[in-house]
Amino acid sequence: MFEEGTKLKEKYGANHVFDFSLGNPNLEPPSSFYQALTHVLEEKGFGHHMYMSNAGYHTTRDSVAHYLSQEHGLPITCDDVVMTCGAAGALNVIFKAILDPGDEVVVPSPYFPEYCFYVDNHGGIARFAETRSDFTLDLEAIDQSITEKTKAVLINSPNNPTGQVYSEETLRELGRILTAASRKQNHVIYLISDEPYRKIVYDGTCVPSVFRTYKNSIVATSYSKDLSLAGERIGYLALHPETQFKEELISAMIWANRILGFVNAPALMQRVVKYIQGKHVDIELYRKKRDVLCQNLSEYGYDFIYPKGAFYIFPRSPIPDDLAFVKALQGENILTVPGSGFGKPGHFRIAFCVDDSTIKGALPGFKRVAQRFGLGR
Image (cartoon, rainbow, N blue to C red):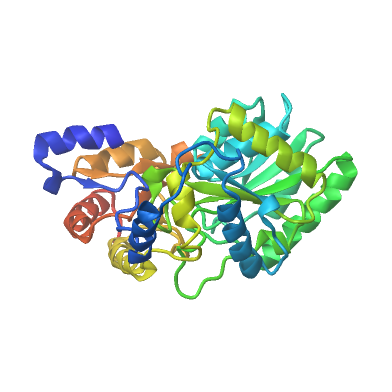
């Protein structure tokens, strides 16, 4: 869809194409980022651009650990943190460390499509568990998906593509399920939480700590979304300080960071982010975009769950063939993504991390297509 958007923009002009296909943050990083960047660039010293430990700079990991300790209420140290090339790098490092060929990872559906490839990269098999109608976790479905080959459950909250946030009660029950399943299967089943949207939440929503609900948990995250640094490829993974086999696990992840070709996270960005832990873009700007789009889509008759976080809306397609419906929107120069790609046919994803003018310009087209398919009557 991204490539299709490029073609349409060349044909009709960028102002006449309304691209909601890619979760590429359109907000500029906050001023704190530029202040930290300027400070780092002016720092004097030797070896700022040399190799460091494959886990990352000690000072950066210490800064991350201090922030996480406050956020999760646990004594997290720099030895529990590995700096990575974004959340994608973190997930690949995790799977390389924990998976043997044929091991399974349970993934609630809908899901970020690349999860399947990350698992497959390291000989694993993704098994999918359906979510409920509001895209909250179906714990029974997850429990039934666990087998003797299950090595991990991978969740994403706030969720891409739905914007759903899982409750603390749900995560606690999931922790109990995984504790019992680990005992039954006689091996640890890890809970991996992919959290690049953790700070992008609305209406007072709180994203619970997986560390507080299950000790064999691992967080993968990045600064791509909350600081709008997607192109800088900087993130980290963190382990619960009481994770079983923690020393072996963290050693495997540090080694995996090297042998997968990442070697280490970008040195310049490591030095920058240590100064801006907890900072983020103005989330209120995303909330306003969400509200304008949701209000109008609702008036046009689209059926969707109001997103609590991230910057996506995942409406139901008015016809079973979501690809055909996305094609109809494309006829109005509106680019969205079929739900089939996220493991949920009959839906489509709208990424609203776009200019306000894109949202405003697309509304008449959304309305015309809604009317064509009998919505809002």
